[in-house]
Length: 210
Image 1: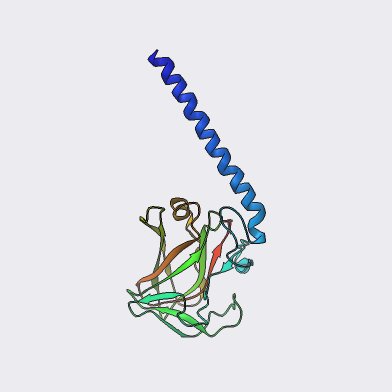
Image 2: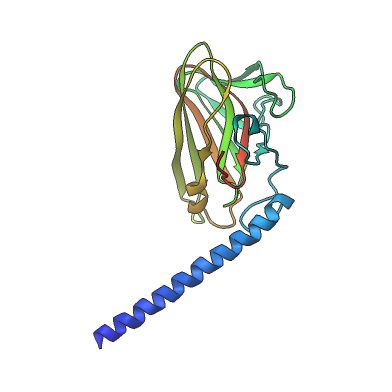
């Protein structure tokens, strides 16, 4: 009898798992068809998309985060540890011709809330070591339905002098950890060593490979 109950229990669990997977797949399929039009159950409506990193072989479509180019000063950003908006723009003009960027001395950090959904799982920006090499660290903060904060490591990378695109940094697990209805997460960008300069923060809707 116990063996039969275990068999029935396993069958029930398999059916429930299959139903859950099917529901998620349907939702993702619906979103993939609507996200480019600015909508979708799991994300969308966060901004117009463009393949701004295509010169470096990354053909994913991105939207520019609010004041991601720092042309409105620090509006929308929280700065600490000596972080400041300075004169000087990245030379590629990804978001148009600008005149400002963010300076992050060692120990400084800057945070911003960005729109996201399960179809908005990665970020990328342009970065330079100001006068030498620097180490940049990105963290992702999301809030659960119960108000519990989830702080995840988005990645750490080394940079040298001169402007270059940062590596693509995944925020997918933070998105999965948040409730389905959430539409924002907080990105925290900090310099662990050296002085970094940041410009043009973009979000990738579909985590496409570059």
